[in-house]
Length: 103
Image (spheres, rainbow, N blue to C red):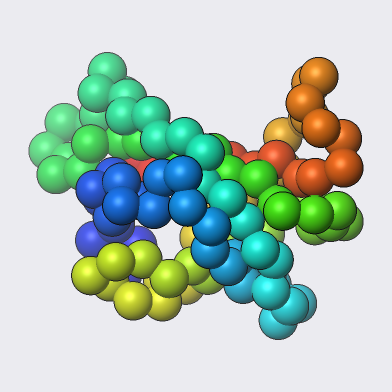
């Protein structure tokens, strides 16, 4: 299912809130902030345009990284999305900031 994920699946979610299902079974309310396509990173013979997604939690969280699931338009619940935490770097330290890369 991960190979089917394209940037347009996240396009409709930009600026909206959703739920990230964490590896321990808990749910984390999130806001999808940014989507960046990286055409220069595309591998030969690859159909997917590489892209990344930035999101943040709506409240404090201790989650750092792991395989999560997320509901995506047209695909439904997508499992095994690796989500990584990134430093707040001057942003609100009361929430968690996360990054997902699709190559």
